[in-house]
Structures are given as structure tokens and as C-alpha cells.
Amino acid sequence: MTNALERYFPDTPVYVDGEKPLAAYFHPVMISATFDRQREGRYLAVYHFGIRYEQGSVLRGEEMADELREALAVIEKENVSVRSVRHAWEAGTAEQGPLFTVDYMLYLQSVQPEAVKMGQMTGGEQLK
Image 1 (cartoon, rainbow, N blue to C red):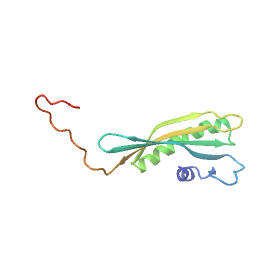
Image 2: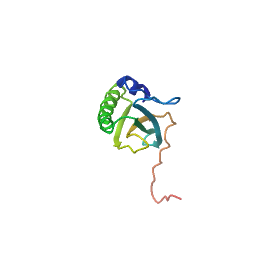
Image 3: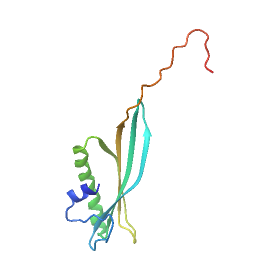
């Protein structure tokens, strides 16, 4: 996420740690990650990222949300193993800038032993 912001918004600093920039900047964070088992040995990971646009104007924050959505769509085309499933924008408060959130879905193929197949039942057999 940080590399994408630096690549598509070279004039806007990205704050991860250390001293905060004096001008408008991005502050990306991973909000949560979910790991879910799917069918046939496939697993799904969903990463919920947040990108705050700090110290910028409210109007520029709204414009930035549209630009972020476009930039992430380009990144998604370059890396077909992930796809975004949800984008949202929340207005900022007096203490914090607007928040752009994105959920990325990543299918993971796991190597597992073959599934145990259920035997055929004949006649009057019962499951216990």
C-alpha cells in the first residue's frame, strides 16, 4: 500500500513512523485481516486497509478519495492475485483527516492431503 501511494502520489508524503510531515500527507494502516476457509482446500484472506489524508483541505480530501480509487484499480490490474471488494470514504473530524478504506481479497491455495471421501451406504446402515 505504501509503495502504491508513493508511486501514484509522488508529491504527497507517506507517513509510516518517525516525524510527521508539515504539509498534507497520507497515513496508511492495516485495520484488520480475516482468514477464511473456502471450499476444496482454498482459503481466502481479506485485508482491511485505511488511508488517512491528514492536514489537507476537506475538498482535496474528497478529490483524493477518487484519485485513490483510480490508482488502486490500476494496481489491481497489475497484480491479478488480489482484488478489491469494497472502497469507502469517511469525512474527517477536527482531530483527524478523512479516511479512505479499502478491502482486498486474496485467494490462497493451500497444499493439503486429499479429502477423506464418504463411503457409500447400502441397505439399512445407520450413521452413529
